Image (cartoon, rainbow, N blue to C red; front, side):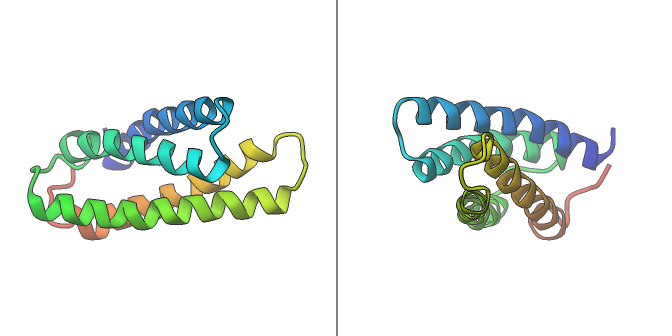
Length: 127
């Protein structure tokens, strides 16, 4: 299985976690941006372990953990702002929160893969 496919499979699992946590928090009255920040952070924790061991077949080294945290810290901020921007643009459309979620997820997925491939796991063996 190619690295991109493994990344996408891991991503589907993590997006599912992100989406479920996001909606549960909003159902309990947590604000949209706070819900999004918490949900994407939860999915990042899961994604690290999947990506280091399965997607990029790499070693769990401190340097990689620091780079991974850096990438995902930027990604979380970007995800929240894209979510907020998409909510602003979609206004009162029926599925505006779902639209915003998808926009934020797409933007951060592309950013994450490129950063992980080209920076975090650059020296890792690609399979």
